[in-house]
Length: 366
Image (cartoon, rainbow, N blue to C red):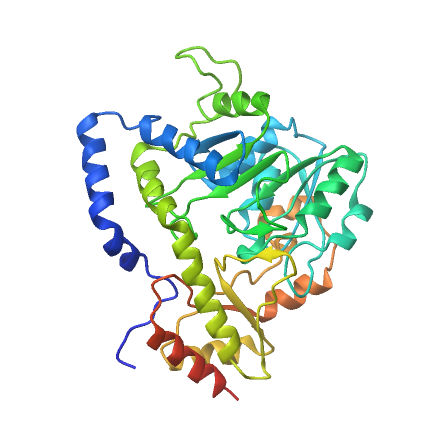
C-alpha cells in the first residue's frame, strides 16, 4: 500500500483547522493576555452549555482534574477510593498523590469498564469515593454506580479522559457524579496542542474551591487560603479547544462511521471486536480488539505496515510505583484483557482506502 498509515494523525486535523487556529493564536500573542483570559472563560462557558452542567473549571491536565476533584472531596490519608485497574496510570496516581489508597475492582470482560456487580463488596468504612473510568470512549454503568454512591454516601468522581461526548441513557459522561474530569491530551477525541484538563460540577461550593486550588489556593493575588497548585489552562490551548469543540460532533460521527466499517467488515474468528453496551453512545477514542496471541498478531501488523497501540499491558496493581500498597490481588478479567487487547488506527481523518487495507489484512490473518 502506498499510503502511510498512522495509529493517529494530528497533522491532518490541524491542516483542516489551521486557518482558524493560526488566526486565534496570533491574536492571543498580540493581546499579551496568555493565562486565564477570555478564551479560557469562553471554553468553560461552552463546556457548561454542551454538557448541560452548571460549572466548568479548566486546569492544566486530566491528571490535575482528578487530583483537584479528590482534594475538593476532602479525600486524603487513610482514605480509600475504588477504581479500575485497566486504565492509564494517572487514575491511580492521582488517588495516591492525595494520600489515599486505590482499591481495584475487576472489569467487565465485554466493555472493559469497572464491573458494576463487584463494586459494593469492596466498600468499607474507609471508602470515600468511586472513580470509574469510561474506557476507550464508552460509558461505564455510571447510572448504577451513581445509585451505589448515593446509597453509601460516598463521592462519585468520573474519569472522562477518553469519553468526551459519550452518553449513557442520553446523558453525557461526566454529568452523573460530583465531578466529571476530562483530559485534553492531543490524542484524545477532544484534544489541544499540549496538555489541558477540565472539571465539571453542579456545586457552586465545589466550583469556587476548585478555582482556588488551581491557582495556588486563592482567587485574589497574594492571598492564599489553601496549599494549591499551578494548574491553569493557558489561552492558546483554550482557543484550540474552542475551535475543535465546534467540530466535535462531526468528528464523533466520523469515528462512529469508521468503527461501524471495522465491525461490519472484519470477519475473523481469531479477533474479538469491541462490544457496545445497550443505552450507550460510544465515541471510540480507541478501537480496541482482542486476540489470543497478541505478540504474533502485532508482528503480523508490523510486517504489513499497520500501526497499533496496546492500552494497557500491565494491570495497575502490578506497577512498581504502587508497591508500597502491597497489593495481593489477581483480577481474572483484567489479567486476561491486558494480555490480549490491541488498538487499531482510529481518528476522524482516517481514509477509506486505509480502512479497507487494514480490514483486508486482518481478515487474512491466520
